[in-house]
Structures are given as C-alpha cells and as structure tokens.
Length: 230
Image (cartoon, rainbow, N blue to C red; front, side, top):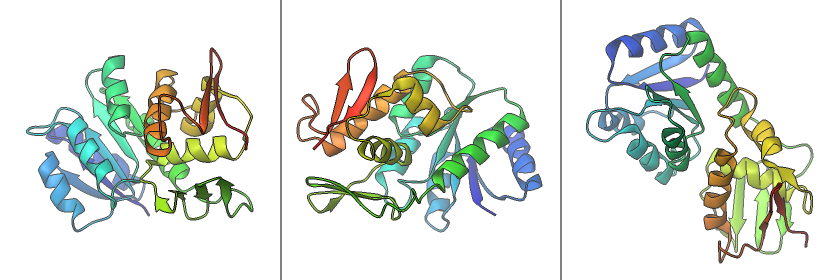
C-alpha cells in the first residue's frame, strides 16, 4: 500500500488522519512541523503528502514550495489542509505547487476520497500506446512521465505535466477551463477556473522562451487554451 506523510501541529487532527488512513491499509508517517517533515523525507519516499498550512516556524506554503524545488519530492502529490477557506489561500497553495486543497473541518470520508483520487491520478503514467510526443525542441515521454526541452529535462509538477501532455497530445484543439478542471483535477477537487490559469502560467514559465508571448500554449480568449499546431 502507498505511504502517506501527514504534517500537522494539532495532535488530535494528526491522530484522526492517521487512524483513518491506517484503517484503509496505508502506511502513515507523521510530523508536527515542516522541519521535522523535511528530515523524515531525507529517509523516506512517501507517495502523497498531507500538509497543514498553519505550521509553527515555516508555514505549509513555504514547505510546499521547498518540496517542489527538490527532485525527490517534485512529483509527489501534496494535499493541503487549512482552517481558512478563502479563495486567496487556495490559489496561493496551488501557486506553491499543491495538487489539492481541503478545508477544516472535514470528514474522514472526504479526506480519503481526495487521497485516493490524487494517488490514482499520479499513477496514471501510461497514455495508450504513445511512446513520444514531439513538437520541435519539446519532447514528451508519457511512459517515463517526463518532458525535455532542447534535451534538458523539465522539472514539472504532476499537474503541469498532465496539462502539457493533454494539450500537446491534441494540437490545435481548444480545451475550456472547465474541461481541463474535469480532466486533470477530477470532480473531487477545487473547481475554480483560476486554478487552471495559475498552472498554465507556471507551465509557460518553464517551457516558453517568452511566457508573455507563448509559442506552444495559446490562450483562446473567453474560452480556454490550445497547443499550437506545428
């Protein structure tokens, strides 16, 4: 079964999540602050991280940013917890690289559904028989879950890779924001269309020479996005 790390400074919440996850058969690692979590990650490789926003010392946003900067954890799904349900907090979490966001108080059933959905999407590595998608200097290997630009491997988050794979796999086709939310995040995730815009912006910063005038991913005003046809 997958290993899940839970980072929360509230003992009661930590035990509630641990109990719910272990009951489902998951192996659970726990930490009460960000530094303890980072130390555990030096010796463990969890399949998913549940990360509280309000932590002592460095908050969850900063820890999430650091996780995305490290190759060993750059592709591990991060589900953020917060007692604040403001859209601004949700967007900030997603900008830092979180894959999902759940507001306290929550039901264990909802949490488990989010965990399973994120693990399932992260395991969706093979896309049909396609071995390689190539657009000029951009090369995507679906089976390896990697993308290269000019021969250099791109450090993409799981959601960024899935967006790139979907768009590049259908050049010229316009995907609405709602369609991207459904295809990439599923029905159990945050449904604000701003989520898509944030991820597209970060993806462009990694694959475009000039993100302000993108070559690969075009904006179709009032509709959504499409990958430029060769």
